[in-house]
Amino acid sequence: MSKCKSSHVSLSFLSNFSLFFLLFSQLVPALFLFGDSVVDVGNNNHLHTIVKANFPPYGRDFQNHNPTGRFCNGKLATDYTAETLGFTSYPPAYLNLKTKGKNLLNGANFASAASGYFDPTAKLYHAIPLSQQLEYYKECQNKLVEIAGQSKASSIISGAIYLISAGNSDFIQNYYINPLLYKVYTADQFSDTLMHCYSNFIQDLYALGARRIGVTTLPPMGCLPAAITLFGSLSNECVARINNDAVNFNKKLNTTSQNLQKMLPGLNLVLLDIYQPLYDLVTKPSENGFSEARKACCGTGLLETSILCNQMSIGTCANASEYVFWDGFHPSDAANKVLADDLIAAGISLIS
Image 1 (cartoon, rainbow, N blue to C red):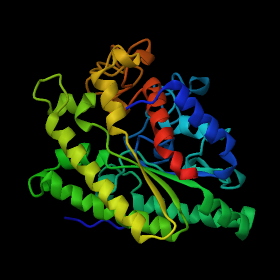
Image 2 (image 1 turned 135 degrees about the vertical axis):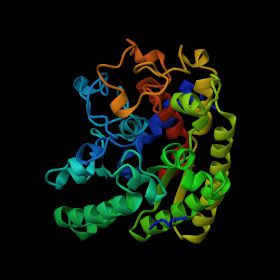
Image 3 (image 1 turned 90 degrees about the horizontal axis):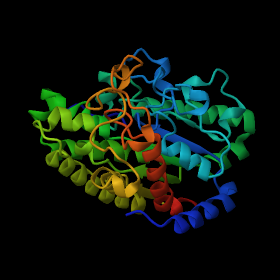
Image 4 (image 1 turned 45 degrees about the vertical axis):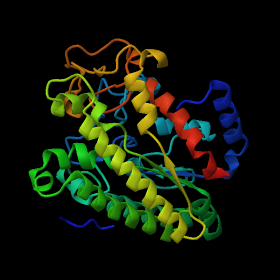
């Protein structure tokens, strides 16, 4: 195999978390994001890739109803997280920055849709591998020193929160559809390779000064509308074997993260569980204020994402807030708001 380079809490309880974050927002000078389409805010707009979301109906419920490159009808979970942390603007897509100046002081977003822990995944789709995202971050650090001075830049780097969301594309957009992988390696073996990549990435990020890192788990991949359509054998139920792969991966991610925490002095590495909150939304939609969890809002809701989700897509829903999923792979704005509440609750220790 190719080697890589490098349950819901109550509303009152959440409001206390939000208050805590707002009171201590000065302790988080910046937010840096790495990963895939779950957190990409427009980096792929600047790439020669088909994996883009910079056209309607993407962004129809975002600010000014503009598509930005976010794979959503509105805000991502990390957008809501940034708001709760007290930021008045979202960390910008690094490749969007024409002049990489003072707008870097509050952080930047390096994520690229179709990227993963496994560099070859990104290369299949001409996306930005994590190894290259890290190179952009190094460049960003140099820019911070230029505009803020070494002392302030060091303070921003060590005090910032780093969020990583990856792994989903490695499975859904590579392993499960790539006979060069699934015919040679079991999903468990592939997970081990991803763990090696993940461990290297965290150590590289740590070596660059990162100390407060949040990492999302894999979601229930077998419950994504497109995954059910592609791999569900004509069933409308979540694909159990794919969900099992996600659970297995998440266990390895937890163990690896604990080992990294022990190995790297001063590292605060927190696992942010996405699996259970999203699984709850999918399996109990009405209890969470949603009416549809099998079909996504865009088009037929069974498969469409990226260029397949467009203004000509027949059947696109009128009210995305009733849907758990916006397109075949990505949650709606309304679901992201729920997921963000769980991220906040899980990530509280990052600023303690």
